[in-house]
Image (cartoon, rainbow, N blue to C red; front, side):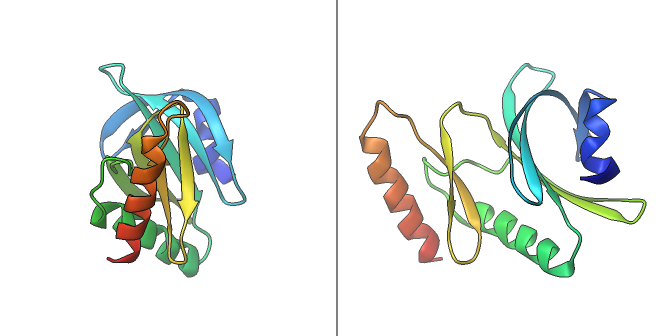
Length: 139
């Protein structure tokens, strides 16, 4: 993913909106993005989504995803802590920081994706996820 995304191999920390986080591990990856577990100076864990933005359409999709997170307030939708678009040497990278949970799922809608928290033991969470998904589509 270019210099921006591979830079953590040489520097085990990353700065997002002037706040430094230590990269703990890789969580997952897709075609143009991947997610890492990061830790702040108070040892709190977060999930950091890093998206390679090569085309204007990708940057628009990233902006829609950030806006979707900011427009939904629900206990089962992960709160967006930080977001930014970094420009460096002609490359762009979108970054989204949310709380880290061992059990979470990304749900895709027609306009964007939202990260939902799930816990396998508690069945009631599924009902809340459905409710939050419905709320997302009524925005």
